[in-house]
Length: 289
Image (cartoon, rainbow, N blue to C red; front, side, top):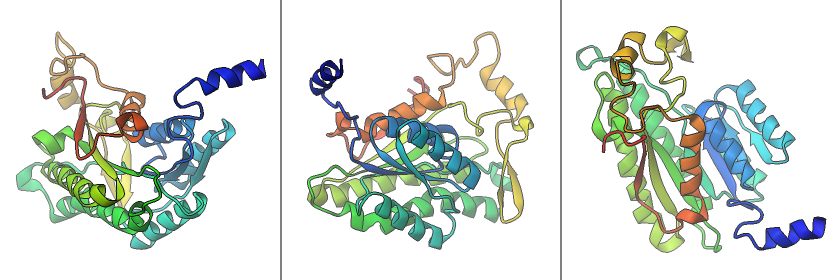
């Protein structure tokens, strides 16, 4: 039986997994889409660095991957701190035997407010978290991507339909996520010709996470002692997702799951997308066509 399994495996295109032998940093991977990315990447043979500000959640994700036969290392910390970014890249390279192949800039949250009431703190935090932090992480990891060893390298930056189309109450988030698209294209143009680095943006629509759950559920993040409520107010959810036809603005008539969102990221990271670079992939169930 073992010989037959080996024979069958050898006939497959990727018997050891789509990402076998690759090392991936996934930020914000202690829960939600990031955690699903970590799980799926590990299932496809990648060694995964689980980065999250919540140490317990990061370790739980890594422990479950390792227990199921995968390979993962939790490196928890605050991406708003430069020393953590340096530590994250250093630990990842050590874990990968001196190599890093994939970077998924997924970490983030929303800090909503209408234009005339938006504070400087709300504005600055969103641009820092969704724009400056990914840039600093890409810059720190540059020595591991600007290489010519014949192995694949790719960077996936997570954006949102808010960044592509704007969204009332999210001018800060929309501005930051729009910037992600330009940053991604610049990486593709700078590092593609000489080093073969692929860079793509994945822009999510309505995905079931804590950011789209009921705000009344009480989920929050804490930044410098301030609790920032997450989610969408029930009244707003009922206006957009309720009615005679639920999710009428989504052709598939439902939100996406974290697994579906993460599967799109895996697809772009995989060799099946080896000629896709500098693109923005919308994962929206058809919304905003």
